[in-house]
Length: 214
Ligand code: FES
Image (cartoon, rainbow, N blue to C red; front, side, top):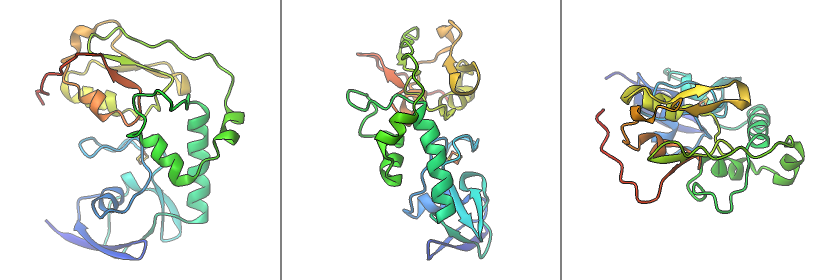
């Protein structure tokens, strides 16, 4: 496979031509905040958190193919500002009660908040006063907590490749995921739960997931 050399935060890296800036950075131990990226899925670019400075322009790194001689900065005043706005909007619409959350400790949102040094008190003031939504426990294998969902789409696109059962319902920040009451389409492979970057999909106690067919 053809190789290209690019510079990320002052580090020269050599990578395959058919890859993206985000993948290359992560493969080389350089962290770029991301929520909707998964290496087995086509990048959707929905979270808008993986932005970087590319030769003076702000781009989404998960959808930017590498090119010979690129100069990438994972942080800059503009990148930090835009990323902060995006994460604050997300957090303001998310119930960030990490205490007791099953995703706590492995949560990608916690990691990004620490990286950006989000002021939780400020964000709490931004949060719209809304009722917590009920837990959806209709699936026999896992529960879905819409309050914790960051709408990264990873679970839906993962399921699309296996059984195509999980779908979106609603619009904007009111979007939820659902099997529309037909959980018989769920293969209980557990991939959606394993790939959830936060604590929105929670395995039911004593459930042993089947091995994924795909
Ligand atoms: Fe690139 Fe979400 S990881 S937009």
